[in-house]
Amino acid sequence: MRRLLYNLLSFLLPHRCIICRDSLAEEQGLCPTCYTNVKFNNGPQCTICAEPFEIKGDTCQHCTASPPLFHQNKSVFVYEPHIARAILAFKNSGHTEYANTFAKLMAPLAKEIITPDTVIIPVPLHFWRQFSRGYNQSLLLAHKLALRLSIKQQLALHILKRQVNTPTQQSLTSAERQQNVADAFTIRHAHAHIVKDKHILLIDDVCTSGATLNACASPLLAAGAESVSCLTVAKVGLNPNILYN
Ligand SMILES: [Zn+2]
Ligand SMILES: [Zn+2]
Image (spheres, rainbow, N blue to C red):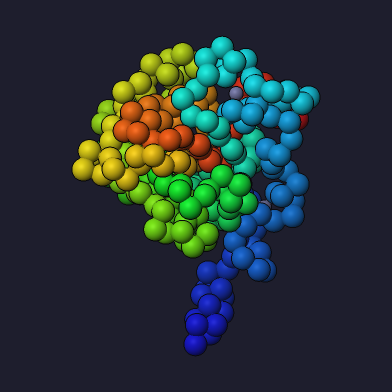
């Protein structure tokens, strides 16, 4: 019966490539062309923020000069125009079903980080932004990821709160981003015990300078979290040669 329903839905709603929207035979994901066009962030990179490097290195200039509060970030992709198209459709155009594909791609990296002691927390949106968008894309990612890994009990979806409706970060410099989100996040104190002595895995769609992840890490560490790691769909490389090659 379930198989029949699945076949019927597949017929009515064909699986599509999340970038070019071409139909796919098996399941929603990346078509062979888009798979070749995207840039997986699996090369040399900063051991802290996942900034892609041209040659093997240790930490990037940014993390060396000002080490973030989080222990590490891992990103599936380097942010470039192809994957940006899918992320923006996921975030701004209601393609919430893309969470499935992204979670599937994030799962191998998540397995390297998650232990039975890990609490998975999505980066929250401010109430008004979530209200106008209708969903929080990071919460969808965290939820699908935990379902896929069968660790739903390790989710804490509402412990962090975005108390300031910050302007979007897109046009800001690294220093401005840091200032923009400083003190933007707080913990719902009734739930603070959930993070005490725990390893946290923060989930977000994109990591640019890491300012947002850092601002989330601050109240979590203040509440007694042992460490904070981050997992994101894409890392915006600060070196344009790497970004578009
Ligand atoms: Zn495609
Ligand atoms: Zn770095």
